[in-house]
Length: 164
Ligand SMILES: [Zn+2]
Image (tube, rainbow, N blue to C red; front, side):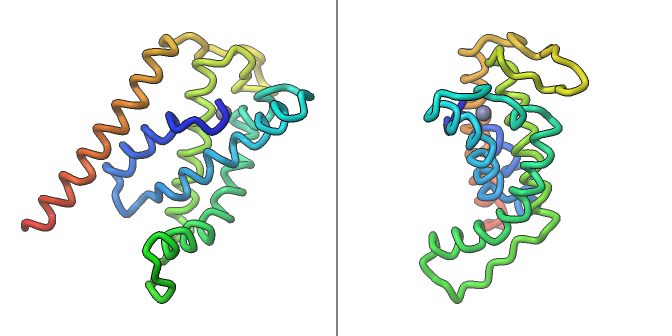
């Protein structure tokens, strides 16, 4: 699903649980990287819509790329958001890679539930056991509610931390 915000829902929930051990920016960047291939296919009308990028093997390669580039891009992005370039922001390599791998693997999982052309275990298997595991509308609700729950938890934890 090219560039849908639904992928961000589980990311927000994971952020609320892992807090500083997870970068939502790097996670978001990995969602964009994952859907570059489907976007090119949609625009050019050529190729396999989800293809190799939406397999766990392909996603592993894209996760390495997202982790390597995401650290610097996200540090820059956070500085721009804070509008303060002297603000020291350092995303560690481990946080960057953990966030990128969670991002790419969760992306394959979510897309394999709703897209019949996704072959997550290629080249080992052409079978997609996850297709139709839950309905598309339920999947969207799960993503939406996990995002809302994550946001509530994130700000809730922050609020309690500021009180203690
Ligand atoms: Zn996708």
